[in-house]
Length: 276
Ligand SMILES: N[C@@H](CCC[C@H](N)C(=O)O)C(=O)O
Image (cartoon, rainbow, N blue to C red; front, side, top):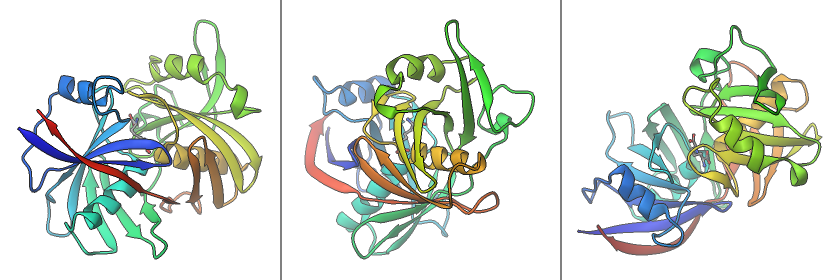
């Protein structure tokens, strides 16, 4: 079977996007892993599937798979690319697009300058919802590994995030602490690990070790997680520039009870066909 796909990226966090409305594609976990391989497959951080909506008030359903083949709940950079893809392919002509994901609903807004704003919904700090093993909700958790003790914030942006503040992102131990914390027993569904350097109240630098992928050039939900945790810890304002290795996102949040809004680019790279 020949499957049509588009390669896209949001700040270098790259995706294969498949229209599963006009095609009928089922991929096993092993097939996704093979396609994600940068030497023997197409290469991507996440596979995004565009599906028909589950209810009349939604435009689409949106499925997300990490490079290791696991299905996950949310992907911020992917959401922006999703919006650009459905417009580019003529699947909708709307500027405001409502989608459901495994973890809830999102609204995507295509801006006049081509950037996309995503209403990411409400962050959830309850340990059981992240999920994080903890007796109560804290602003900072102490997490111990055999050799390291770290202080981190934790939040669900629909998917689990742990955020550590560092003095300098360029020297942060992303490759060491990333996998240790991703797979730490206190995160029963694993976690995405952010390393945040606070530059000012309106500006952070961030690197993210992504669950099921490794370090990526950018992580949209990771940018939102770092911003809301920094804001809760009184280090950040309500509009923050987040510099990631692949570029910059704007994240806005007015505090608990409000949704998080993320704005950034979404780029089309090429269209292709793959035999499955
Ligand atoms: N790249 C993403 C997040 C993708 C999912 C994540 N790796 C997870 O396992 O939760 C983003 O831009 O948010």
